[in-house]
Image (tube, rainbow, N blue to C red; front, side):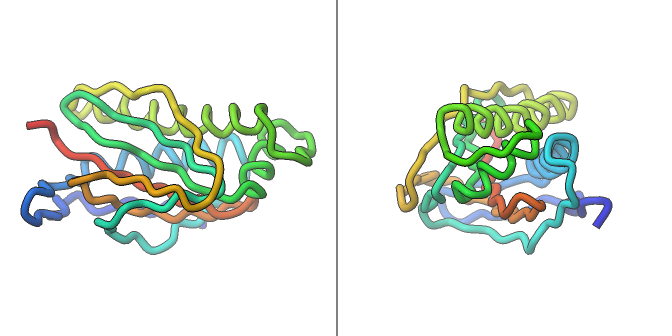
Length: 175
């Protein structure tokens, strides 16, 4: 697929008592930024899987980058993948084989998530939603439970030649 499919410009009403609404204007910038950054850095075909909405706690992958968003839009963005995928992505980015998951891989994957989230936040700003991103946190080890409390997550599965990445966007407009 040469062009990533973008979500339609409508409001996803995820309202259950206490959950609020997730607006597509908050999602599209992440889909576009992920496509642009992965294409530039990994230089591979990018396939987007079936979108889904989750309200349960997030179970971390082997490597999960977590970046907070604060301001008129608030919440968290999570990028989950296997260690093998993380090493393969960094290998593609650097042009060198990366045999072990180490601090360099951890740093590069954190920065990849940071660049995607940073680009998306610029687009949110352009749309009139002032926000900032927090420094990335990397969680290594499968099975950690991460709760987005009362914010549902839009799950965007992405496949590149390096492996599968699951992007979870849990954002809402500040009240």
